[in-house]
Amino acid sequence: MLATAGVGGALGMPPVLERPETRDTGAVLGQPGAPAVTPDRLTARFGFCYGGGGRNCVVDGDTFRFEGEKYRIADIDTPETHPARCAEEAALGEAATRRLRTLLNEGAFTLDEADRDTDVHGRKLRIVTRGGASIGDQLIDEGLARRWEGYRRPWC
Image (cartoon, rainbow, N blue to C red; front, side, top):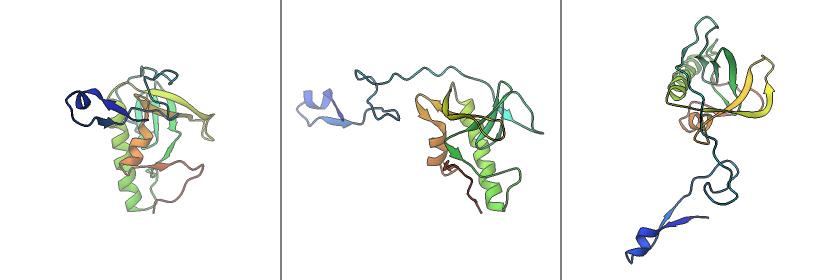
């Protein structure tokens, strides 16, 4: 369903079609029966994790520590950096790592539950969102990640 802007129609011009904001459910936000977007409340200042530890830091393009807990972004896969298997993977993995740090530092976010709580490495699996939109989707759109398909595929 597309909403029309009232200004165009009021001035005798054809109404302007606007695409309403939606969540994964496809429901139009702000409409009766639509899910409410929970305000983002989690914030921290993220650095890079060096030597495997840290309280609020980014390990790689899909893994970070928040308040000392290790999280894996459940809806994406990014190139490996520890170790990368080729020069192209190393460069893309480094870019994804830097971009995730920037995105996490841009403001409050939410950690939404995924289909399971932890992975085989003990990392908490979460979908990171801001304003109801997946940060993982943003990394995919920017060419720094791909959709998680349940297994790793080579980047080289």
